[in-house]
Image (tube, rainbow, N blue to C red):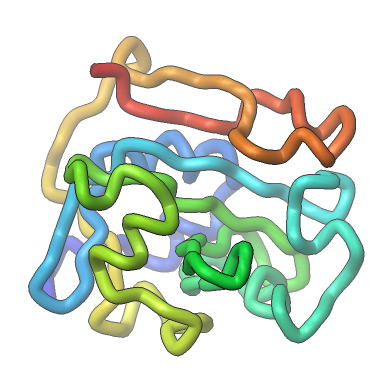
Length: 170
């Protein structure tokens, strides 16, 4: 494993800071790696788009862990989605990794299919497993980052309009 794996302290910071800082980092799993180019933040039980909005369940219990764990869920019964937990234990927050710099992984479901990430990887410690994120020294300036509302959460009322999607501009 790389010496540049992100430490727990990277993930236990405020979610929006972690989201921006994930851009340009590399997602690594087994023999594949890719630069993270798009993420979305989901923060706490007041965020109606967050899986934890309805409280703690078997599905979302990983979201309540401290920062630095993989939260993998199945959407539409077809596609796995990879999130990384953030902040402190007991406060449900996570960041969806939407895309890397590979056309085969330019969406959250495609990303998991490309890497072979499934629910079997739910709860993995990203600081101590073969699924991790590393810093390869890519410098991202504020001018390189775009921001918008999250995709596909129109059901979430006012939460749908929160500008918590971050992406690298082309």
